[in-house]
Length: 114
Length: 114
Image (tube, rainbow over all chains, first blue to last red; front, side, top):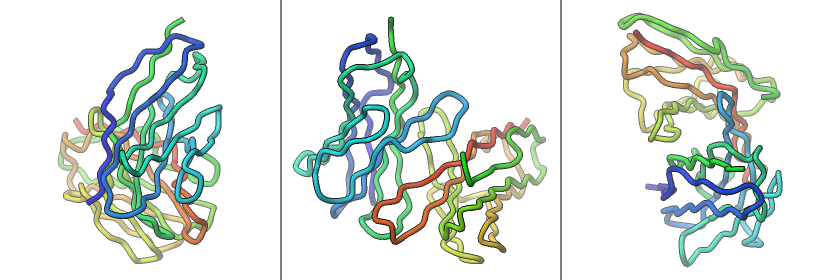
């Protein structure tokens, strides 16, 4: 069975500082990997995705993530955080096929301090 | 979110009553999903559909049923609502054959069972 672990429930980062959110997955083959962001009271918005090719993927809002097969990780990074980045972030994994259900991590709440 | 609408957005109901939540899409996507979101649990899959009248259970399907009589509509029914079903419910859609399309999420339905 596939699973996702986001080790950090909350993270506080100063505005302008760099950010890294951790995601570890468990899956038997090459997975599809996703990062979503959720602002309060809103649905989830796709930030970026990985399914093959270059292991460093770029997303929206200046985010990037790196797939490391040897570490079963897909960490999300941003070089300089803005106050508007405060939200909850979810990592998700799915089967490497044309369709699959996604399994989500429990989320990491990002707080941005002035 | 564009192309996917959930109704109602908020609902308060009494224990033991049936409740139906609706997800409507205009994207003609084949796959539709119902998730629930609870603090500390992230998103968990309730049911999903891979075509008209084709549905399957997710990890937390007990107490829920679904129906899909048209491509655009996916209904989630709580047969007899319980307090443990108080949650935020999200519908999502996806279409295979596009690499790793990920999901598009609706804005959610906040359900309170009293």
